[in-house]
Length: 269
Image 1 (cartoon, rainbow, N blue to C red):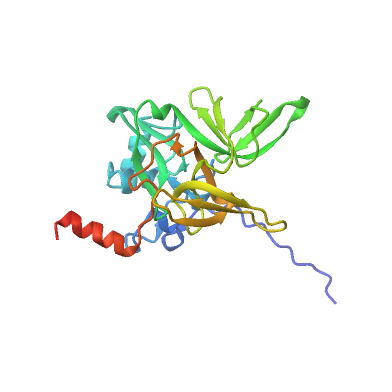
Image 2: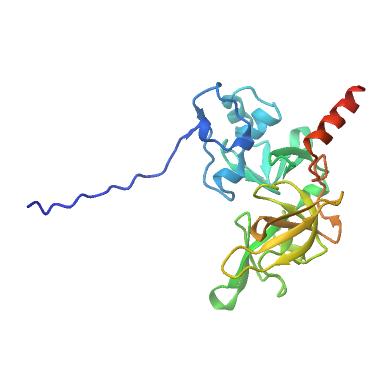
C-alpha cells in the first residue's frame, strides 16, 4: 500500500480577469476583447471598485487605448485622494476624489440609482475632503485608539463617540478627521450594496435581528420606503442635508413608466 500523500500546491496570485467575469457596472462590451483590466490590490475590493484605466478610457474618453492611459498616468497628471497614482489598474472606489489638474477637473466616485459609478464632477472646494464609513474601532499598542474606514485608512485618536457604521469627514491633505456623523434615524444615507444600490433617503428605522443581519428602513425624498442590510448603508449627512453633492437624479429611483414619461417629455412628444 502506497503511503505517499498528494501534495496540493498553492496556486499563487491571479493576474488576469476574463471580460465576462468583470463587474457588470464597468459596462464593458463582450466583443472588444477576451480580457478586462484586473484591479491591483488596494483600498477597495475588486468587485466594488473602478480601475483608473476604465475611468479615463471608457468613462471620460480621454484615451482610446490602454497604452494612451499608461502615458497619461506616467506624466503624473492624475491624483486619487490627493496622491499621484501611476498604476493603470489602481482601484478607485466609492467616495474617492479623482483630480486632473491639467484640465482643472475634480470628480467624486458615486453610484447612480442603477448601481453604476458615475463621473460626478465636483468643485475644487469639495474635492478637499471625503467621507469614510467606520468599519472598526479598537485599541492599538500602548493604548492608542484607532478606527479603520471603508477605504482602508487607519486613523489614530478618533473622537470617543465615533462607533462602527458612523461616518467621518476626512481632510485629504492631512488625513485627519474634521467631523463625524452618527448612524442615527433622521440622517440622510446612501445605499452602497444590494438591490437598492445608489438610492438616497432618510433613515427611518433600525431593526435588530440577533444572529442575522440588522435591517434598516430608508425613505427617499418622494416618499418611497425600502429596506436593506445595515452593512449596505452609508450615512452622508446630518438631517436631510448631505455633506457631499449628489449625482444627477439625487438618488431617487424612478419606475420604468416614470423613466419613459420623462424621456418622452424631453423629446417633446
